[in-house]
Length: 105
Image 1 (cartoon, rainbow, N blue to C red):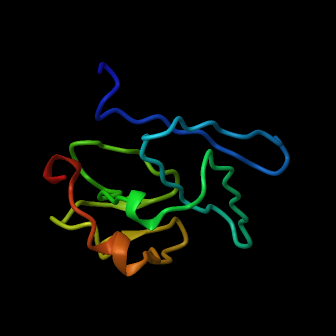
Image 2 (cartoon, rainbow, N blue to C red):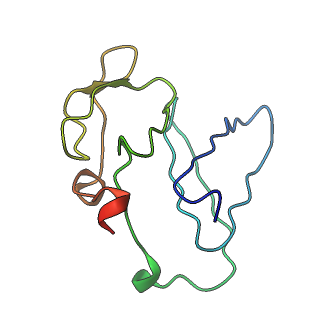
């Protein structure tokens, strides 16, 4: 469809009290901009690990603008070379650091 491979971002805060709806089958990710972030999901069915997928958060083909994250793509999804404004490096799960680019899925 016309939105395949495109991204959209929203800033969700406790003060704004908003939620974001993701239709089934849509990829999603987030960056925590403060300490103590709580993320809650409401799903349409029971969790099934076989439904999980993964794609590189920094894939240059997607060109997602992550607020507060600076750095350059170095050929992998690993966080090396990226930092927050205060110089703190990114903390990624091992799974996220090894994620493939979306065209490789």
